[in-house]
Image (cartoon, rainbow, N blue to C red; front, side):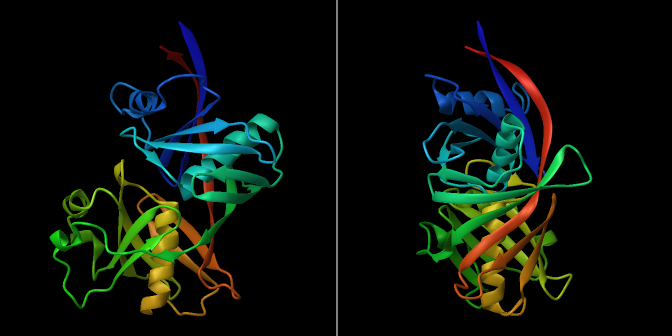
Length: 267
């Protein structure tokens, strides 16, 4: 039996297993096995690093249920940390993803196991209402935005996120990432919870934070000219900023923490 060296990381509690060049194997099945929290290592997703000329690497993402996803804001920070550990430096990284190219800039923190990563996330783009949206029963006056950062998001403004049955709502639109957002506590901050496609309720979502920040500026929950939006999630806080010249272009900044290096059997 051969083994596979893996690293586990988390970005604000949104956790991932990273594998380099696992070879010819069923990656969807591997993701389900490794991400299972009872019989596997446990994670929200599996990140596969593939060699690609002109890039630090190509990132291929599988959700915990084995489905393939285009992009993850927390995942790419974890992926970048894994690449930096492998290369031994914190040089900027150009990473290929199914959602397009992303550039990640890394810096150290007071914790030797944690880096800070700044990711150029690209443009936030409007989407059509997803199939089955009416099943959520949103009041017509409630603010809603359907947005893409290479992956689909539906953001809903609410008065108090703590009273919302997010698991129930998320189960009605499993094909999108569903974010619920309330204003504050700062003038330039919002608080968000997320039900992710392919993983369920997670501690944080980087692309979701960008979608929520963009929608919140559009709705006036934060000032339209705010230099950055602080997005508070169950696992911690990320910062989202927007290009002054291209106001739909988002940059995400947050931590990535190395949890463990693991040898796992590859059957």
